[in-house]
Amino acid sequence: MNTPGATDPGRIRNFCIIAHIDHGKSTLADRMLQLTEVVDARQMRAQYLDRMDIERERGITIKSQAVRMPWTVREGANAGDSAVLNMIDTPGHVDFTYEVSRSLAACEGAVLLVDAAQGIEAQTLANLYLALENDLHVIPVLNKIDLPAAQPEKYAEELARLIGGEPEDCLRVSGKTGEGVSHLLDEIVRQFPAPTGEAGSPARAMIFDSVYDVYRGVVTYVRVIDGKIEARDRIKMMSTGAVHELLELGVISPEMVKAPALGVGEVGYLITGVKDVRQSRVGDTVTINARPAADALGGYKDPKPMVYSGLYPIDGSDYPALRDALDKLKLNDAALSYEPETSGALGFGFRCGFLGLLHLEIIRERLEREFNLDLISTAPNVVYRVIMEDGVEHVVTNPSEFPAGKIGEIHEPVVRATVLTPNDFVGAVMELCQGRRGTLLGMDYLSTDRVELRYTLPLAEIIFDFFDQLKSRTKGYASLDYEPSGEQRSDLVKVDILLHGEPVDAFSAIVHKDKAYNYGVSIAGKLRALIPRQQFEVPIQAAIGSRIIARETIRAIRKDVLAKCYGGDISRKRKLLEKQKEGKKRMKMVGRVEVPQEAFIAALSTSEGPADKSGKK
Image (cartoon, rainbow, N blue to C red; front, side, top):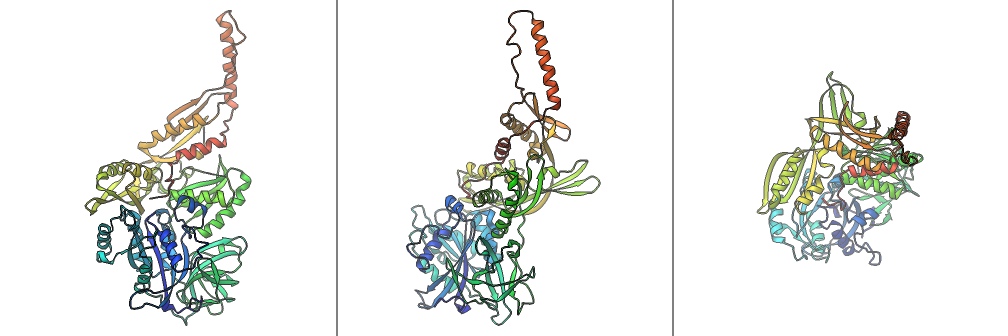
């Protein structure tokens, strides 16, 4: 019944599960895999679709995973009808929104999952708006109804008011016990539309993900829109014009299963044996070389990096390995962007763009684990636009690119942030946002005890420890979501850190004028503790232009030259001390301060506000 490649499009349902972090997407996906019997009871494990070690350790989904499941309707007028369900389990974290947007483009429907004990949260709203933008049919579902703290009636009303429907329309399930899951699968078949496409037209398939396999090369995941792709066809990538012979195609169920062909509406994989990772771009259209399509599909909007950070190998000889690793990771994570850069202190590395601080942390961890690299990452910063007095414009992604000379104005990126919080904490949230140069756009009461606050905030103010502060001030109840919202003119300065009078580019930062002094004092204090004492005195200074705003001094190591003097005249002692002083002065003239690698790692990692370790927003 479920022969891949021979499926009538009318029986296919493509859908994804969207939710806030920790609302039970992966657990619900596990129950669906068990009910449809695509995973053997022996192989079943919790969070089956979370394949990476990092995902399993942190309990979060980082990569969306597609899986094909057969289902026979059990209830209602259509009982006995068989269907093929293509499900995509998506991440919930704001930093992986690009994964969600690509998954939505491959679907006709979305299951909106809400925790019956926690209710609607910021990321629930963000993902819902993404689904509505893509014209998807949404089924609201309350999960975790088996919990003692669950309040399904209360949150069903909230959901109905948000989507526009009746509270009875909200399905109630428990991903843990499996209650209500078979009814949900029946509703998916009944409510979601079947994919539409021209079966007789030239083949067009959208690449929505890809992964690198050491033995098989690039594995490309596609959703077929029109026509049909058969095994051994020669396929063509429409953006690059590259032509490859298909070695294998098939479906993911949830392991790879070979198929003779993929037709309209089907989701599957293609293997061409190509090892060059640049040949397969997410958002590209695949067609048949012998009968190519005239127009490519729309593709995806390119993600805009929100945060930039430099990644440098601790061992300089690892630079080529880091370049290859980034190429392969880019294939698996299309939101990552990078370009080579050099630093006087750290050598050769890459300037990488990320969607957020957790994204940065995950990418760095994956590079270290999957490719055995030891890396230093510089403090994260955002992109500034600097306009000089003579009208010349500079785009600054790194403090070392900050132009010298007379500056007319500086523009920094701002975000529109949505905070959902119980109304007891409104004052604390407002105080935090105003302390971070935020502007209140408005507030709404979603229910009697939950408030939605909307703020415009500078991106630079929220990429450090804003989220940690928000959680601690609201006892963990608030949730945050943000999206880019243009830029604003700001009073910013570049703070340089000078060691022995020489600027060290890795420690420079662009900060607001009011916070420059605090930054200078804190980093100078850290370096004083981290840099070993030299034979001569070393001043550590923080400067804005030529004006010193903070200073710490590392005292010189001194030999006790008075040890051999006992008794006698003070002038003998003074003569010896003066002689030592002259020697130290000469040393200072020619001395150079070598900053040990450990000091860089410690200063840069502690100057980054700690990212949210659990990954839960």
